[in-house]
Image (cartoon, rainbow, N blue to C red; front, side, top):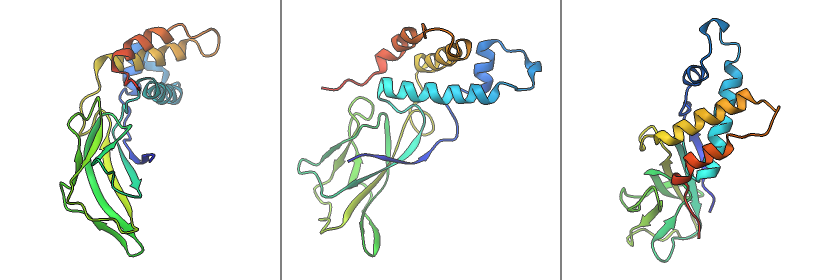
Length: 186
């Protein structure tokens, strides 16, 4: 089961204006570097998502299952998990929505995100189980922690200042900022 992102937020956790202020840019350049700064913010956010194994912008994800898990739990690699938006059974005739509450977020949506399945769920009987969830910091989820926001600013600034001319010395600083938020695997 691989969650598929079906909708993403249009807003990054750090704006171009915030990065411009962090870099102490003059306001008279008419935004000549704004496209580059936006690309750097997106790239840095994506690399920190990989580093921390957390989603730094809100999004909507779809999960497809062939059968209900026997233990009634579906662990998800989506931290923080915000809510279950829709659950249903998809067949030839379309999707039949399940009653609200039959599929719900587990007790720890940040450190152990997952879904709890009520034993009263109907048997899929050859149909595909579709579940849509909201996950990520911001939006309806928890706010982005300040150290991760600072890591985005520092990494983006370093990438801007050292565009290929030397090794990335700030990598360890940003990794240190992100380390407390990294989800560990066993």
